[in-house]
Amino acid sequence: MTNLRGTRLSTQEVADLLGVRLETVYAYVSRGLLSSTRAAGGRGSTFDRAEVEALAGSGGRRRAAPQRTWRGPVVDTDITLIDGGRLYLRGVDAVQLAAAVGFEPAAQWLWTGDLEPAAFTPAPEPLAAARAAVDALPPSADLVGRLRVAVAAAGSVDPLRYDVRERAVLPAAQGLLATMVEALPVVGVQPDDGAPLTRRLWARLSPQPPTDRLLGCLDAALVLLMDHDLAVSTVAARTAASVRAHPYAVVATGLAAMEGPLHGGASTLARELLRGAHERDPRLVVADHLRTGRPLPGFGHPLYPDGDPRGRALLDRLADEPVADEVMDVVRGLVEASDLHPNVDLALAALGESTGMTRDGGEVVFCVARSVGWVAHALEEYDETPLRFRGEGRYRGPRPPQPVPTPTGD
Image 1: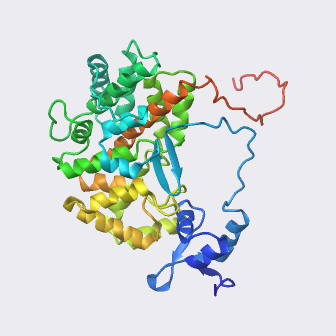
Image 2: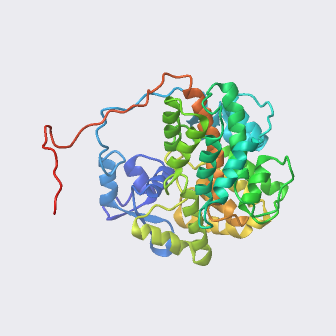
Image 3: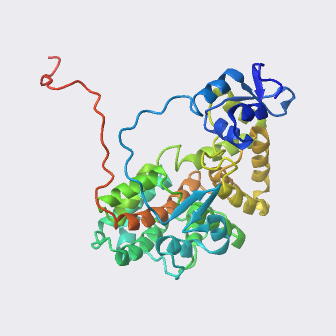
């Protein structure tokens, strides 16, 4: 190191000072733990020395974490492992699984550990209820909102929904996934009867006729996004399952937790970033985010300091598609300007932008895919002791007894 006493540090100097790898520094920037500025001449980034030292003194955190008096149960699971920068589904590398099998057999694998084929066909009555409820929504309703309505309506007419034995949950889950897809309005070419679920979903997201290779990209995205260990929405889904909520309610709970820009909505923010970088120099778009202290949507991931393997796999597939050439140029420009690794949200945004999907198409893909994981975790949770997710609050209000409040005003 040659500049430790200067006010600005290079990326390598920051890594040396913090004792981390370069990729971890990029992840800190993505998470908003550090801010950077492009170096003079536009080569590399520089960091404020005082800010870096403050981060080093906090052990990688700007603020001390709040004291915890209850951490909840340790959840034993056979479903997902994130280790060494890789994602494994039942011990199988998720990237390899996505390259080898389609979405429906992969869902069966996650649920049962078996690739036995199964038909994902909606039951007539739940589908009719879901379509009627979705059709009653105004045109301004977004697709994710329509999914939530479809799940609630379908569950309300299934008389066997409270049967949480595996033999009942599996066909209900297969039918629910198909219902979620087929309840959405068709915006593209109507698929043939009995088409794979991926083909049926494409017709609801993009007006463009799909090629087999593009369907393969969507299939891979669905498999790669099926589960990601105990993400926030999965904890919510398992909590619902712990009180023996039926599979429709479990999925509805997961969908509710997906709302917001920090989880399911991240791909929509990343797509806006792609559009902005298409219209302007990507370096200026990145600079705008750095100047305001905002993390760059679609870049970095705390669990993958060396890069999100899901995003890399999906972007590699897209790079071979002519329809994605222009979007991939924008992605490369953003990567070069930011010195960050793209994650799966950016890859999902690139898929949607390349194929003319609806604005929230990436969120729909995320929700449909992750519903598989929620069901898998529900199946595990149904075998656990009920009600094990109850937390313990630390009361901070006025000490009792307090007087009964009285109305104010006339």
